[in-house]
Image 1 (cartoon, helix red, strand yellow):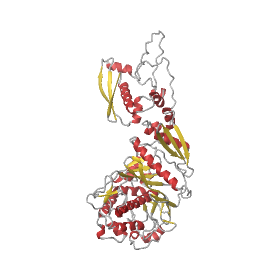
Image 2 (cartoon, one colour; image 1 turned 90 degrees about the horizontal axis):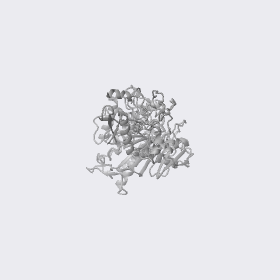
Image 3 (cartoon, one colour; image 1 turned 60 degrees about the vertical axis):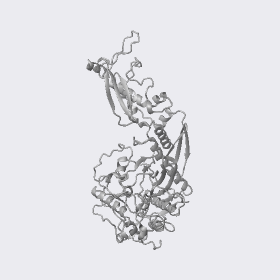
Image 4 (spheres, helix red, strand yellow; image 1 turned 60 degrees about the horizontal axis):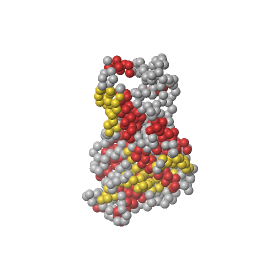
Length: 610
């Protein structure tokens, strides 16, 4: 009997009888209903809930009532809470459970707006009821459902939303800035056009207001498991770096031109108002082989994210100077054994790059919206390969199997290309050795990046593999406190659009406390006059000046190194961690790490920069 009832209730069985209203008009001829997705664009609660919370599982609890009129009970767990629904079929019970779950966390002005925005009739949330089945049949429509954009959806949910627009003609990437005001909340979006900026701001607003349906997303790729507050922080860090750069270069339109923009932000807990910008940099070039320096006075790699990290190292020296002089509070606190220092609790560093770092993270990420974060060919040999930057050009090439591990000075001077490891490879190294480098490891424990925020070309699977995933199975034997860091990864809501242009032959470098940025000629690795204060020679001077004035982990004050290379080699734990990293690349079949000529690090501090 129960089976017979199921057949009658099936879409392929007989249609439901119309509600008895007392009139004697003959019923219409019965026709098989078409697929609901073709006859209307309404969404039931299950569809809406599945878009908001991916991967939910509905559990059948029990069946009660007589066999000819069963009552089914279904449960669903959402955010640790269980919601129940009952109905004359499992489908209707599932809809009821989803409806109860939706009521618990969607905060909207009113239910009518919710129904209108999602394409659902507010009076017909129970799809098992006969009471609202009209006697007139709607004609089947095969038209494709129109996807609502974020602006349209926001306007339907919040009719009184306010939009404010400002323009920055000096930046082609974020020329327009849209501010959306919803009640007391403000949301921001930037873009190369007003439409792009408006969509980005509306997307940010929908995410924060806990109504981030897939239709509301500007980009096809958005990490569904990113919490709204985390996305808000990432957007804030990216925005303040972009605004600070625009402010710094407002009177210098020539050097405001850039392809890659990077910056590092230090945060104190969850309060965004306490954040501090540590560095802002641009650049896409490396030094020419004929201008490499034997006394550490030229910058080798002037890609934006690389020099941003050199600025962070300089900032660490500033903070150790505060310790040495007992002045203002420093970001460092003494270790328990009173030998050296560690970062204070609650302080975190976040790296922003307006595009994916060159190398393994970027080479397979031409579009954010191609199949989301899924890599269809994760086992291809090209995945994860170490790559080197091209001298006097852009892009990267895989490390050759028979390449020499160390380049030679005379070979470079005679015309061999100067090889520099890609940014993806270097950031992967930072996730093992820390961003402080070898010299600072004499004084402080490793410091790791908490999150990496990209402005475009974000593919989660490729970025994770490039920055730590490709070595997580082969890295071993790391001496404490070194570890494999796995930073959080975010894509800005206001993604930067591609602007085809020739890469500038200069790099802009600004760090906290500086009145104006340095402008570096990327061909020679130096500013127009003198040397960069972020080059090896200048950082070595700062290192030596701290010896004996602050405590050290390695007791370097007992045997002060004179040669730069010796100072780096004297940190045994850092050297071991770096060696184990290179072995991890080899074990994974990803190639050899190519080092610069040994002569580059053989200079003494007594040698005058020139």
